[in-house]
Amino acid sequence: MAPDSRTAGLTLIEVLVAFMVLGIALTALLSAMLSNTALNTDVTRRAEAIRVSEVVLEGYRQAGNYGTLRNTRTDTITSGGTTFNTLSTFCPLDAPSSMACSSSAVYIRVEVKYGNKVLHKADTYYTSFGSE
Figure 1 (cartoon, rainbow, N blue to C red):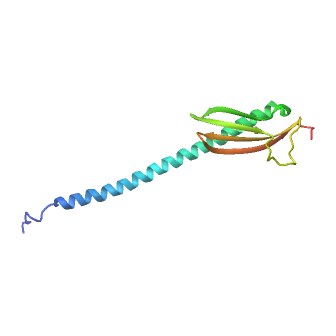
Figure 2 (cartoon, rainbow, N blue to C red; figure 1 turned 180 degrees about the horizontal axis):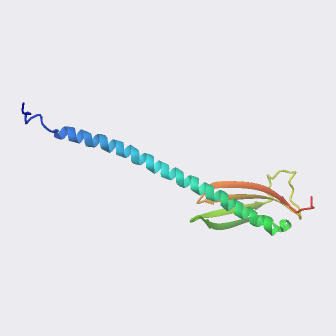
Figure 3 (cartoon, rainbow, N blue to C red; figure 1 turned 135 degrees about the vertical axis):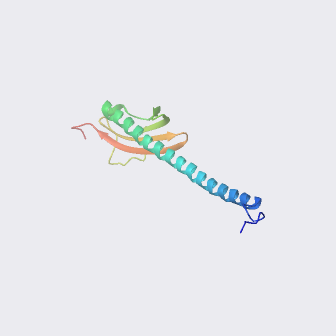
């Protein structure tokens, strides 16, 4: 039996509905991919910020002149293709009293920022060997 020419193929409405469903599905997929990309970028920046704070703190440790580290210091550091601003605070007022600053010891707080957002904050206490 030959197919009726009126029932063969798809109607224009069926094609439009199929394209609409496909468009909604692709929009949801694209949205999920963009969200994932933004999350990956944030995680990568935070990991790089941790590395930056480690480099800054290691520089202070190797300098060894703990008695001269006071007040605050800001630096701009580019790492992994991203530029970060660091704020180093020496002997902050809220440092633990058991970690007092002296000529041979210093409490250091380093904040690593990307733009205005603090991505990482690290606190440490350095003392010279054989002192305090």
